[in-house]
Image 1 (cartoon, protein in one colour):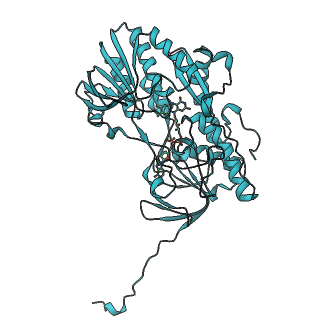
Image 2 (cartoon, rainbow, N blue to C red; image 1 turned 180 degrees about the vertical axis):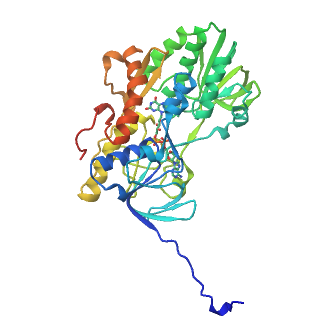
Image 3 (cartoon, rainbow, N blue to C red; image 1 turned 180 degrees about the horizontal axis):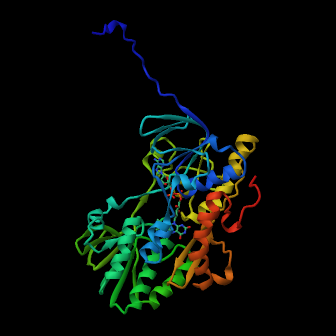
Length: 420
Ligand SMILES: Cc1cc2nc3c(=O)[nH]c(=O)nc-3n(C[C@H](O)[C@H](O)[C@H](O)COP(=O)(O)OP(=O)(O)OC[C@H]3O[C@@H](n4cnc5c(N)ncnc54)[C@H](O)[C@@H]3O)c2cc1C
């Protein structure tokens, strides 16, 4: 028998792993930033670490078309290792805590990481669970309830449209991060069912007080909705889903209304990940509190954020991410490598393309303070076939072929030259 006195006891201390740049999230923003940092030669890939728990990268924009039966879900997903720049380090455990005073990150498995610069790009969480009964109906294959906000529920929406034989359709929207996205599935469902002559009664319930936050587009979409016989109910929030019955609440009076339905599309409320607020990086709503024009954190000069998780007061879209990325990178390099002040260049540019049918798109483009910022004004006074071609065919190509290589500059076109 072994003599226990001779056994040496070791204590294992997990050593922190250092990266010059840590990026939390390998979604649209995390991928775009890492691709441009590498492409522009600011860092060698091995100095960049991306934290992303999902094995597959999702082109979420494509889920609208999955729901509308215009695209296979496989076309909206690619393995992470195929889209991340070569040799960038990947940690596939979710981040649970950041200590911005000590420049450290902790992942769920307890591993510690340190960084010189931190970019938070963790998107938003889709909170279906906050609507009573919603998940139960969404997960029930027999229940006519779906959503383009998750790929499985988007596939369900496609099946629901195919099988729909007539009745009352309800589309619900909470206060939305991008008001254009939910309208897509309303118009595309209308188009498909009209083509089959199915007798339908359409109702759109929005928590917001207008059809779209920008008056010009609100008017255009309002007229189209009227022409197509869609009934819009404003300031109404979905609070409960039951079998063929929904309960809405008036956002001001709190009075509740009940309605039956034969088809229900739910847009989930969206919220930032809890670790942001718990790490002291959040604003009052829990979004990463960054300067609206520089994208630098308001308290920590080496912390940055972009995309859906940021406090940037604009409509949260992939198009906004494309505009934010080069500005964030420029400011990060300026402040860190050249010890210069960040430039206040981001003016809130965002874009919401809305399919008004399966032939036309209304391209809404605007910036802070609801100001229009249109690239193709000739084609943006109404819905247009040219914008449809751009949205349906060119944007997915730009995403998968140019963006992941750091070559896509959004509306600035192809990035052939270094950004800084
Ligand atoms: C149905 C739908 C249609 C859309 N249509 C359009 C459109 O037509 N045009 C447009 O411009 N935009 C559109 N968008 C919006 C666009 O997809 C988002 O704005 C964009 O994906 C935001 O990028 P992001 O990187 O901030 O967030 P995401 O792309 O959501 O990426 C966030 C990533 O962070 C990861 N993450 C989260 N928590 C952690 C953690 N704790 N640790 C590590 N990683 C974490 C997540 O796994 C995720 O991969 C659409 C979105 C949806 C859902």
